[in-house]
Structure formats: C-alpha cells, structure tokens
Length: 166
Image 1: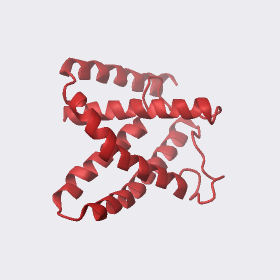
Image 2: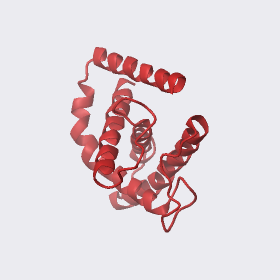
Image 3: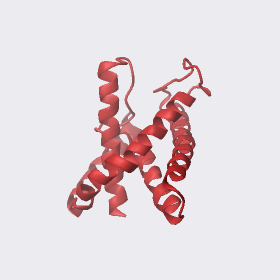
Image 4: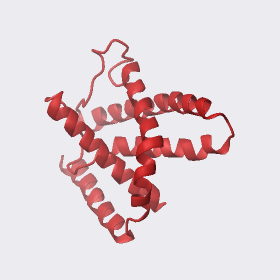
C-alpha cells in the first residue's frame, strides 16, 4: 500500500514539473492545478491507474507483447481521458474555474477531452510503464515510512487549506 501512496506523490510531482515546463515555455496563461504544493493529483491518479491496469489486468494474461502494448494504449487512452473529464468537471463545480479547455482542438469532445490529448496520455502511459516506472521503482520502494507520513501530512494540510481557504 505504501508503494502506491509514494508512487502517487512522485507522479503527482512529475505532473507538476511537466506542467510547469509546459507553462513556462509554451502556454504562459495556463493554470497548473488547484493545490498550493508541488503536485498535481490528477497525474498521480492517472499513473496509479496505469500501474493498476498493468498489474491487475494485463499481467494476469499470457498475450503477445505487441498485442499487450496496443491494448494497454487503447485502454489507458480511454481511462485517463475519463479521469481528465471528471477532474475538469469537479474543478469547475467546486472551484468555479476552468484549468484546461480543449474546444479549440480539432478532435475535441467538449471542453475537457480531446482525441489529441487521449493519444498523448496513451504515449505517456507507455513511457511510464516501460521506461519511468522501472527506473523509479527501486527508489520508491526505499522511501522510509516517516518520509511517507510527513509527505502525507503536508499533502493533507494542502488539501484542507485549498478546500477551506481557497
């Protein structure tokens, strides 16, 4: 369980760094999240979802690797787009803000989902599964419990501050 919690924090932090980079170099007016800390939970939820999909769906069946990659790609494109859709709606309803809007994209499916971004999420997920996760798993598994607890307390305080002070 601690592995998943630490993975959530790490990938949420990576999402923060990714969006900070994109915001700095490409989209200066972009809003990068609802929390004050250096994390974007939607990326953490997305990465954990990808890890669960791999572990509990695809690692249980013997299928050719090429077919596994295609199936993972398609399933993740759908599932992460669903997370993005739900996250966009929740942010809009709770905070009365729109953090992203894909209506200008050629293949948008409303404000929060587009085929272009679904393909980006699929490619990023394959990178997580086959490149990033194997590199960072040894590090994630060595994080001391007290560090996980400390990060959890800070994250919880950030949530409380965001929801009740924002």
